[in-house]
Amino acid sequence: MKNKVILATVMFLVVISSGIFLLNGNDPDEKTVYENSQSLASDRENIITKTVATVSPAVVGINVTEVRQVNNPFFNPFFNDPFFQQFFGDQSYSQEVKGLGSGFLISKDGYILTNDHVAGNAKKITVTLTDGRHYEAKVVGTDKVSDVCLLKIDENKLPFLKLGNSNDIIIGEWSIALGNPFGLFDVNDQPTVTVGVISAKNMNLEPVDERFYLNMIQTDAAINGGNSGGPLVNSVGDVIGMNTIIYSTGSGKGSIGLGFAIPINKVKKIVDELKLKGEIDRNFYTGLGVQDIDEKIAAYFKLQNARGVIVNSVMKNSPAEKAGFKSGDVILALGDFKVSNRNNLLGILQEYRTGQTVEFTVLRDEEKIKFEMELERRK
Image 1 (cartoon, rainbow, N blue to C red):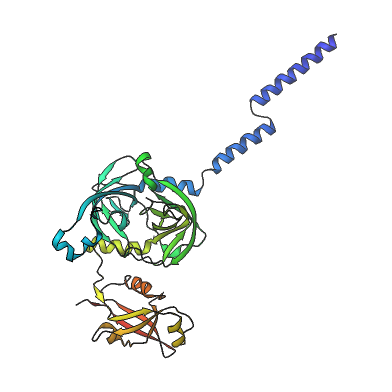
Image 2 (cartoon, rainbow, N blue to C red):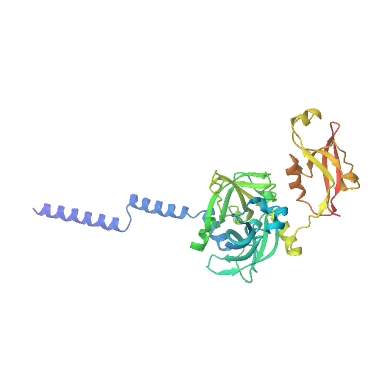
């Protein structure tokens, strides 16, 4: 009996000791689970989350009010013709239209970047910061052609983003798009974040509403309505582009992973000019008349493909004539840009300024030659 009591006492002490051991977290298996959970929690904080936390305060929501001329729906569209207007007057009327978009601070004293199609034609612009403050913004300068608009608010000591180098981007590297899709910024006072990769670079798109999009950055980070004007940043928080345009579904509103951003190196040049002059000087002319190349033209001139444009007229005493152009010349490239069609050539020319000298690569009599042309001011 005495031995049983001693054995029971020993067993009781072992159980108690084991309980204390477990309560103290000293069981090897229990400790491993605890350490693993702590490790997983720390792994959630990665370079993406840290970058988002750093750059978010410099992203802004933008609300605009525009005044647009709207045709009276109760009148026949023929009444818009000047002939009928002399009898019935102008049947259009002014209407206020509200819109929204995104932007980001690029200086501590309140300079903000966004798209021209967001705020370039606005009568009133309200900027919302992530701390809930609202400011009336003014347009410092805007450029429809490149779709870049520079705003300013009266404030100091603001957070701002570092403008990176879009020439250094790598296809496949992380990309983070921030902005104000569908006006969600107004609800939460914080930008929405989507993450993807750089899908392609140097993408030339067709012009939209007299805006030209060359050398664009493509990303599969979801970009939706209202994201326009927001920053596209890399994994360390440097701005590499400005979110601008998407290819969407049939409804025209949904992201399908084809978003495009204006390279920030191009934007920086535009900003410098807007700060200095408030506009971009493209008041030049070439004196060239060109047309697209079809299969028949390509076959006649023994071209390998239908890329490029063919010169069909040269204005007398124009920059084109002085450069040496003749009808029948095929323009293959302008500077480092390959020319694919007439719209593409027109867009490439918008990259240059009045007074600059540009180099054309031309095919004449099956031989490639180069011409230099000064972009003279339009007379």
